[in-house]
Image (cartoon, rainbow over all chains, first blue to last red; front, side, top):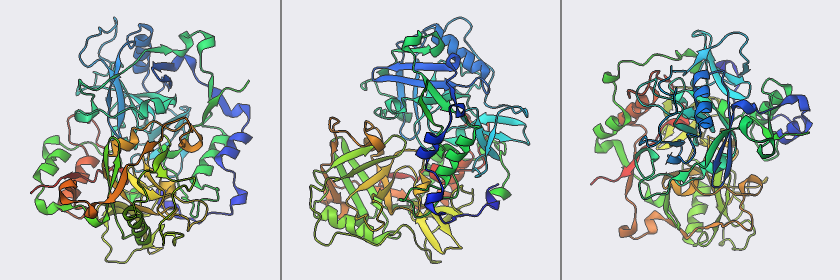
Length: 289
Length: 289
């Protein structure tokens, strides 16, 4: 836990420790896994493709809904309706102009999930302000409580959540948001998170902020169209983005974390000695063949 | 400290606790102070004015340099040269086309500062991953170590720092950056922070990300011009932005923190019970007369 650690340790001699680039260069193919194509979304916007990997482990009903919506082409021709600075980008159909496909309606809240012993969870020992325990579950930043026997995804930069109104069952998956600011961890356990953006964040985070309350676009601002959202497994192989993500239970990932916790680069006079969950980069790269 | 607190406390009845909007509405004029005009910068970009308040308490030599540079009109016609997603926006003159004014050169590193007992410091009791103690010093997020007898500003969203190269004395103030992503707290104590953006963040954070290494703009990308940077005190009164900032040692600010630590709004099913230093909004508003 946080209190047992020494703060502000001086940097050890730099030559001994590899940088993140060196860790990644030294990794083996077994340290990586391909994206789960059946749970990956291609969000096509005018400037290119945003790729979201979802994990059905924490919010299976919501992930299933989103896939149903994508397969019904529900999202196509919807728009990005909200860009709130240091908070979220959001798309949806707030005026309900597009009817929901059959079977999509209220859904049980999945704001956290049971945490059985066999759930993948690589603990980050650096402590956390919000949760008793944090770490990584198969490529996603997560938190856990032994007392509650529950686990949940954490609202880090790039995480994707399901918008809802006051009704906790109202998050059908038809309205999604992406975190574009400092991790709004107060949302943890209050909203269903479904995954994270693994490529193309800059196509969302660099959008003009909306001028209305909560960053919604006004009628005179150009809402960015969503051209389409597709499940990657449904896209012809030739049109797929072939990415792989570092296995967060690998020794390479542990070394990556250490390379960021105590940066060996000459620039650093003082090593942080600790790292915040949301500051750990979960590396993604083009698939090697 | 973090370990002594109870995690995941359930929300208390909502009616008892005010929201941030209610806290601000109930605040008194004494809870606010005007910006320090002699240490405030107006950064004029094509889309409008970005306002930075500096604090000379932590990096007096760097703040003095930046004011000298602004008064020499050194920054005028420089460009934003770097926008790195989830990290920083930066402006400067990397190819040294603009000579530095007389007297501006190497400067002693001011990455932290002495922390005498009389330094304003309102402690945030919620714990922190990076520092033994965090809080607010006269409107700025800061950290402190009783062991080291040092204090420093924290790299939260919107904080403004002085770019440097490997030489710790090379940060003259001629190149500045603004944090536009999840707080890169590993930079704390490695760079001189001088202040924070109090208005206009969206004019920087919404810029297109640069396509070169580390988010630098390539030759074909349009670097955004800085029209001018002026010290607010030097600008005619009629052209000033009259803002005030909440006093971070006030009861109103303590109530604001609590309203964000345990959000009373009906949306929230679970109150966080804790808040991260960089998630506390340091409220700024138009000056009331």
